[in-house]
Image 1 (cartoon, rainbow, N blue to C red):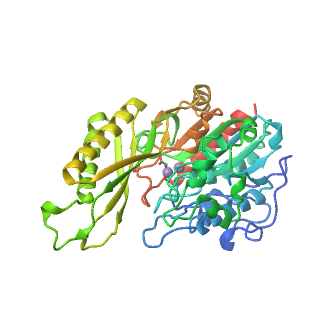
Image 2: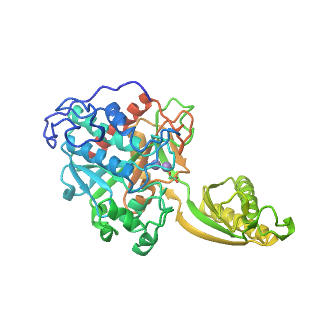
Image 3: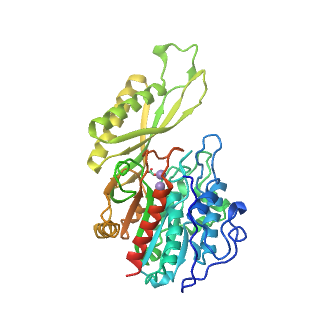
Length: 440
Ligand code: GLV
Ligand code: MN
Ligand code: MN
């Protein structure tokens, strides 16, 4: 995305009074030009200021992991965006950030937003596009002179990707009561740092975390805009689509227990090599998923002792599997586990499988989905295999998603992209949706 978009003036039309200090002065990271006093930073300016945070110069990808320095910088950026627009800023008990236009206590709020964290070496768009577009859409509503009859809010959900603690959507799961305190407090990162310790170090009270039904009860609708993570829109004339459903998905940890030994002196027939069992399991996963029309990915692995000249004692592989329905998903994972155990028996390797997370199929609220598609003039309605905070919340409040066209379909990679014109079309579409929902 390259060309600059024009900034949209913040009007004095009865909306909350914006902070007219330049954003740099108001605490925005980077201190770059954020627009003249009295104007909110444009989509392009917001994108530019967010872009350097957590970017790995070698890969060009992002490492914005929950409760790290990069995450804190993203959070400061969010807070500055809220403040520069005169929105009421708050962090909830689970560390999710909110920027309110109107009185949150009034109820029946229309909320939009997404997340700012990333997978390891992730792209710039997965999450941030939704947050930046939300601020820009509010600016567009203001420029239109829209008068919302319901409170509006923008949210940045914490730890959506689960890159650090292994569980996706921690912020929204906690809020929705879908993650028990015991499980949350048992989460550890690769260095053994607990979620609670990480939160505390980042200045958030971990004792405060837990379900937040009162907050959710004040929300009438949540709409998440997201970059498309496939090519369903790429060959259509539509820059924007609406989500119908999210495939059920989960993460399973496969522990392959073998025996460490010397790579140069241990005869082949004497080895108990877990790498062999792991490798066969990866191949089996691919085959079982292909035959069932499902997806199965081993994208993360750890090896002990991890020496070039030592047979491994333990290989841990994390399986991410998804399918159109829960029965197919369960069958595929069971077949992969069976293949692992059978191969392990031949290799003298013990196999232990732990389900670390599971998200059932999500069918977005039909009324809201249809309303969005109508408001947007009959755009495509499509399912996705990717998980989202919107999917977690859909069990509790009416929820919908909008997708912005991704020309390559690539995601969770630095190659993830969207054309700037499409991003701006997404902003206008989101403004149309917010206006349609909140101003009628
Ligand atoms: C999140 O992006 C997921 O689908 O894993
Ligand atoms: Mn993602
Ligand atoms: Mn995302």
